[in-house]
Length: 81
Image (cartoon, rainbow, N blue to C red; front, top):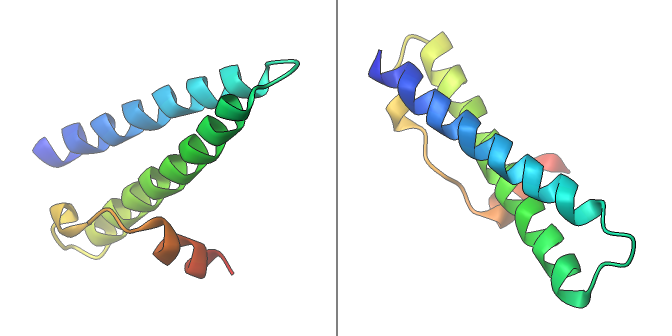
């Protein structure tokens, strides 16, 4: 049950980041700081989605989902290509 609770914490963080992203993108005239924050939030979202996918893959393979680790933005970007 602890595993699902940890998934929920990752999902909650994704929701918070998504709300922040939506707020930033809704600004009619974003500042330079807003744009920088958008990039930061997008990168962090990519990392947390990757972490959640790893956890689910480990669980589906009958392994410990706690083996999942936060990967660097660079690593995730390479996977997306």
